[in-house]
Image 1: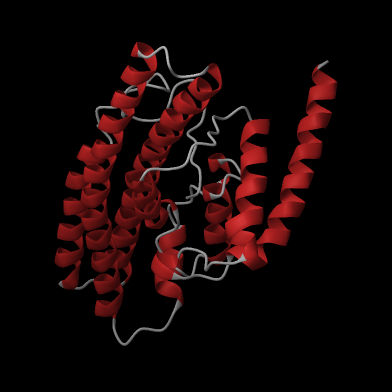
Image 2: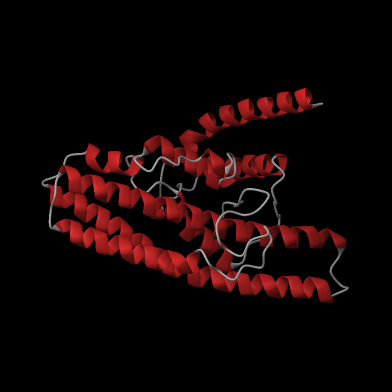
Length: 265
């Protein structure tokens, strides 16, 4: 029985990998905020394959239309769940496929040195340029996380109202109930995922700053350190949202029992 399951998982992994390479061409071109440009791969094929893959993994997948706040939440999550530096080409493509749910989020890289390698791989006028880029990335994440948190609170309140109506009403048919709870799970999974990847970004920035100071000390390090401290302060609010608890947690750390989920809007 275990052997058959292993074979099935291996077959799925091979199929997912083949589809992933096929879809890279369609998902790699970018539009606003670095998201895929509108095309048949990004708009139709990737979501369809992603939904199938998510269901195969046993993840929640709702067919409900998204609210404006849910759409906006996914748009704001995009920057955070991708690697911080655009030169991390392969890692960015893997994250795009995870965002589309074609690959599980666990497929993403956890190499804290990757950002530093990308930051120092190009040509810069001086070491100050590297520190400035680091500070800009940390500040940009801080501002976006503040917006994401406000957006997430609106989604959480709406989900609480959704579940109250589901419990109180006898007018909701059975086929509407599972998609409703699955959408709440998708929303909370996305919030937990953003927290996880934002923490990873913070670690990557600190690693890069420490190594920049060792390699090329500069007074610009002070500005970068302040930006990183600001990001760390903002991260607390995002990672301690008043979640409903679909994954057994309340926003602190990874969900219990299963990995976080997200559906690309």
